[in-house]
Length: 186
Picture 1 (cartoon, rainbow, N blue to C red):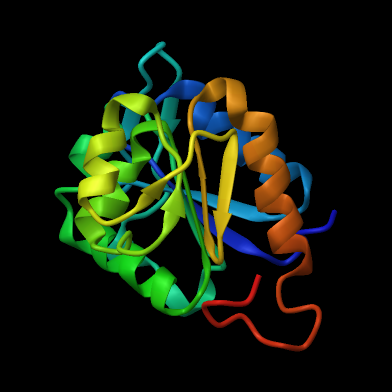
Picture 2 (cartoon, rainbow, N blue to C red):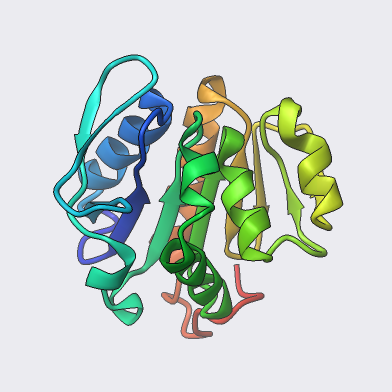
């Protein structure tokens, strides 16, 4: 229970990649964290690409950013819709300014690109959006998981074990050494 007391939001929207949403949510909950599903509409049931449902608990307007330890973004086709929501983009920007966890897998890089937080950052993503990430100013690495300060990214569902290992490792030790959680601290 290394994440007891921590609070995260997992973004959700129609056509999310089922494993990229549920695997991290389950792993974080197993570690003792509270995870809420944040959608563009509160209480809506969204369906994943493979038919698994997920009901949103809240919207970006329903939460206090100060009370959240991080945000996770699944892939699939959902990021193309999520990136159009100003509240979600503000959430991503605020989490980044505070040095809090931003985790993105597969097509989720689209949300980070639209939030304008990728310039000068190292990251990975599904290869089909690599050019988009590079054009947003990121340095692309073809790796299972890439950690750049508070930003943790991964490519596809097959990389989920490495992705979650990095997320849990970072969040388990975050702030425990007394140096704070500002951007730049790992």
